Image (tube, rainbow, N blue to C red; front, side, top):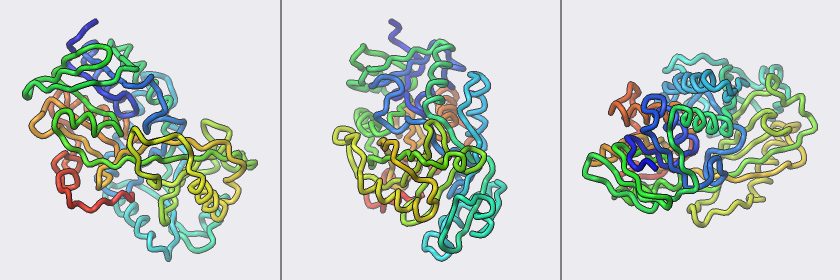
Length: 391
């Protein structure tokens, strides 16, 4: 077996599979992907049928990236013939007299600055366009046509399969034992299936990133939470079909979000970043029944036909820096080690982030402004930084 590669990627979920694909497009057989679990596992955050992809974002630094993420996915879809992104339209919504109405205004301001078109309207127009919504007070609604669904099960598989077609090697069920940097020029990766060396190492291990980075002396303050999504067997399937019902984010005490019927013959919804803090060792796969009930009550009050008998609830992990911004950078003093942490909202960007990682690894630079995603920002380096995970 080949033991030296120009580029090694640790973690082959959403972002890691993207990095593997974009690296292999340029470096072919000099790329190795290492995954500790079986490929396409359900232990991390890149799983299931659907994630929201959107131009709408709460801050300009993300809104300006969103057009590029659509282009990255278009490249993968054109090359693979696999439909990964499905346009549904999408809304940001909140009660006008709520303390969380400012969240909606933040989205509007960021889209304005990034020249992203959208419609703005209130409760009457919402009921006219989408009668499934039944708000019990005046609301602020932002509608953006290009919002849709990015399918992780398809996206990850397309990334990895195409990467292998370019000559990349992928070793799954292969935990990392140790990482040994060689000054600033390379890294030795010790795994259960052998020892490998590389010139550039890309770490995209989600909730496991903290432990891997500690092996090379980098402390990453990371909060890991166990989140969950619930599928409902609504009897009103046609009302929630794609083309009739948009993806939504409803800003309240938490951000509640949901999807039309896709992947399962059911609707799907969740409460963002509301799970208990865990570790990769202490997490379990058991749904939190109280959070299920809270979500169901929220939906029954605002989108009553959305719910029905529960099909199932499944869990996943969020891995979030204290400011809930991406980490996308070379490590200080270790330019040969590049890492990306998606902060629990990155799947929509997964292929673009993989492309950026490939550029940093091969070229040492990228056209995108990454100044707010560095490893040296206060949220990463200042122990007194006050966490804020609401987006």
